[in-house]
Length: 289
Image (tube, rainbow, N blue to C red; front, side):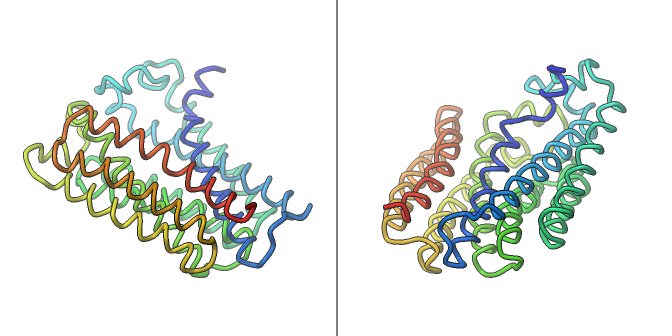
C-alpha cells in the first residue's frame, strides 16, 4: 500500500488542492460573499476530492509513460514503477481509475465547465507536455499551462463562469511555475540529460536562456499578483504584502540570474515553495483584518 501512496505524489497533489481552494475562495468573494454557506462547503469538498483524484491519476499515468526514462535518472530510479514494485500495467489501471472517478465526482457535484477544465488539464499534461519533454525545451512553458488551470477550476466551481479573476489566477500560477521548474532543472540538469529530457539548463548549459526565463517570469509574477488588488479581489494589506514578497522573490531570482549554481537554485526553489502559501495567507488575512 505504501508504494501506491508514493506514486500519487501527495505533496504535489496538495499544492494543486491549495491553488484550487484559492480559486474557489476568490470566486465566492468576487460575488461579495465572505463566509461559505453549507451548500458551498459541500461543493468545495467534492471539488477538492474530484481534483485530488484527477490530479493524482494524471501523476500516476505520467510515471507509467516515463518509466523507462525515470529508470535512467538518479532522482527517479527508485520510484515504485521503475523498480518493479508496482507493475506498469497495474499502475496504468490505477491511474485511469482515479481519473475516471474524479471526473464523475466533478461532473455530478460541481458543474460542466469545471469538469471540462479538469479534462483539458489531464489531456494537456499527459498528451502534450509529457511527450514534449523528450523533444523540446518548450516543454516547461507548455507544462505550466495545465499546472495553472486548477485555480480556474476552483473559480468556475464557485461562480460558473470564466471571468477576468480566473484568468488572473491562471497568470499567477503560470508565472510562478517557470522559476520554480527552472530551479529544479538547474539542480538536476545532469539527471535530465541522462533521462533524455530536453531542459534549458541541460541543453544549453553555457547560454543565458535559463537566466532570462527566470528573470522575466519573476517580474511578471509581481505584476500578476498585484492584479488581484487592481481587480478589487483583495485590498491594500494584500497589495503591500504581495509587493514585499514579490520583491524578495525577485531578489532571490536575481541571484540566480547573475550566478547560476546549485546553492542559488536551491534558494530559488525554497523561495517558490514559500511564496504561494504566503500569498494565500495574505488574501485570507486581508479580509479578516
